[in-house]
Length: 411
Image 1 (cartoon, one colour):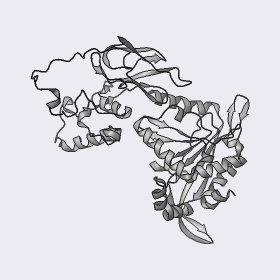
Image 2 (spheres, rainbow, N blue to C red):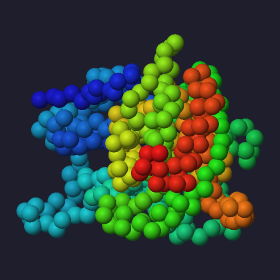
Image 3 (cartoon, rainbow, N blue to C red):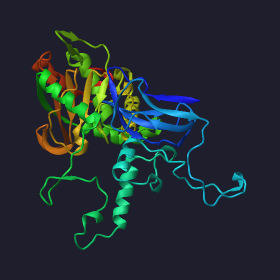
Image 4 (cartoon, rainbow, N blue to C red):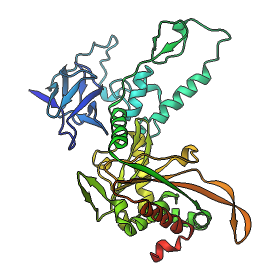
């Protein structure tokens, strides 16, 4: 019996997907629920599992093809035998008595989508890579570590060798001048979507940025005092982001227009607080959404952010986790940024930018002291947010962080 493999129902507002990687070839044996192919949409990579066990027939869509929902991808012949060459040393002994083989191409290791792409680009054998993820799943960091080890094991040549001997890199196309290589790589769907939304934000919103700075001494003292107890009780480390999310929610409740969005000639005021947390992933910047942050504890927030970070690394964020949001927070400080002007995430009307914590001289009680300071930036849509509200919103965040008791007392 022949079973069809079709494109699953795509997330709302997604019209098509790109066939990213086939993990099986025609004639290969497949097991039910085994991942056959990755489909890339504007936001996420979808895995298409085998609907049944059997042998994969001809592929109806090649890598790079655009496909619509319910489009035919391939056929599977149920119960058929894989077209594999017979072993030259077939043994008559029962299979149960043969020693268990090491993982081979018949039992490939699990590989995250981002790692698969790198393995394919670098022409690597995943069997040689040790996976550090759950159940030995190979992550992008494992591939990079493998490449580093291989580079260390290969001594550098004392002279320039022939081009064929250069370690494996994606083959560039030359510009026509010797020694001046260029490489043309098509944008991924996610990168193209990011570019589209950033241009959209620039063209359709009146963006303005206001700045302030915050003394994080009180927050750092709290973290130092309660960090170990917090982690022991909740199983997650106490970071800075939960303080900023809590402070942002308090400020949003005081200034509802910052939590609003524009829809044509209407302003939509949201009575909930879904905060987007910008996360850098191997595929680009993604902004998963923490829902109902006004109802979350600091431990819930930290746990949610930690899960988003791992999912972004694995490429397993769902479309639902990336849609919606009423306000966003981005932290360029983790990369060393001292000051920046973040761009809005449409249709939101504001985004908070965090930056590097740096000790600077400040005046306290008439004395110059060194304090851990951070610049804050609020980019907002001046069509609906006035400068007064934007400045007061940022001051409210600053006050809450410099005196965290305000978050408990809501003053």
